[in-house]
Image (cartoon, rainbow, N blue to C red):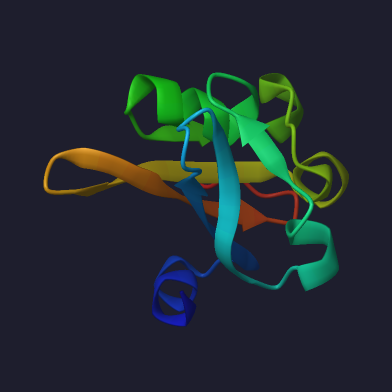
Length: 108
């Protein structure tokens, strides 16, 4: 996580994984976020930023994170621009990695 966050020059980084029934994403690892906050989050596939990536299997870059109706509280509260990509292993989706910028700057 640290190498990815540094390479992208991101303020925070999160790896989300599908739960056992593959209906929700849960935080598997994060940097720059409070652990007690990340443990409670379940993001339904198809909802919010990461849920849309999970459903479509496509990367997503959003300049204004409010445009994607975020599910996670830190995305609603602290993040302006966000980028995420699907994480795959042997062709099967395993989770999502998202880059979030707390500063008001585009990710482009």
